[in-house]
Length: 557
Image 1: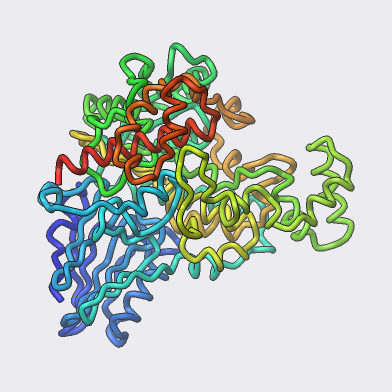
Image 2: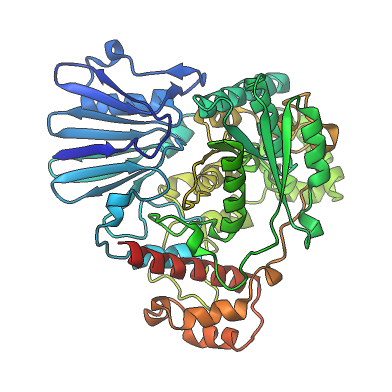
């Protein structure tokens, strides 16, 4: 089997390629920098440790012991194993034609790959319209797949098979019971700093922060300032003059004042945004319709500002809610009560939950005994709501799972399953913008940090009645008005974001409709001015994004 690695690093600035010779016949090619999976400190494969292991054992050692935004290719003779560590943000796609395995990285398709004539994967396109958070190796093209993070690609005997190890990594992470809240906070702080250092290595003076004024992005901003104390730090805030509910400039200004050397920049985003399409002209050719394509105009303006400032790396707080467990107290009640060691401790937990929820202690006791399968969170991840299609979309032809290894993950404690599914969801918040010179990284997506959050008792995440307590206590530099924020402003109302009548009209003549993936009768009613409900609005947006991606894909391949 031939393996073409020539495109694996070409689209990743500062992604150095290093080769390690393990034996006379076995090599490891590493793209990007790696860190130790426990400490988060820089690390690399050790030939002395790996010399007596078989290639498959080397691949498994790498995925269990190393992490970071990197990928490894273990080769010996005609056999290869491609390893993408847990939550590596270096995306890897591949195509196997029966003879040659071609690998590439990056959100956009390489120019020479777009010249191929690919067939569209209608099953994937249908499923992703129903639920854009679907985690699968499939893409919009038949023959092009993504190597998911936490997975190993086994390439031998003329076959290519992907094995997902991420559930095993989660399951092997023990829950600490003896540590104090202060220890959890200190560990998470050190690992967040390690994440920022890793994701900005080589970008000194070229890093910008998308900072809304919310807790997640503010924590990232403070951590970045501590990692790069001698660099000016651009902070970029977006707002809309026509939407007061999403205006967070007061909080953003407080953050900018708290960070020495911060350079605040404001971008007004209401002007020039199309209400009749999803601005497909802004995007580069990509393997899939972007889950966040509707935010394309906003992201384009952020990236344009970064280019103006000379920045080539963007950090965001995406994934922070999931990492630090933004869940309701009622949802966490079974695990909070379960961690209490004595009956008196359980009563104290229930009393605190009841007081905060303004419920009786008996109501909270019932909530603590509620099976996970009865909760909306569980149903959205593993049950009947995962692929529930509004009437404008055709129902899936078969039962579908939102994530690989659903049978295993669905049996975990609900908070751990939530972190697993939701952090994989955050991984998918990527967008390929045409002519962008910047890449985005999310410090929350760092396996050593995620592992530390997983090991922490749930009572540390909800500590002294405070939700996301670990994140709130992480840095004394955070302004108090951000530390004590209960919620954030909402985005612009969906009912005014698009002209849904025009979206429906544009879909009536689409191949999606011709293939019966959309209901023509429902579309006709919407095109005639029928007011869509919230689920239908989302469905129309996803259908429009998919339809425009198809047109773009057919024009460039």
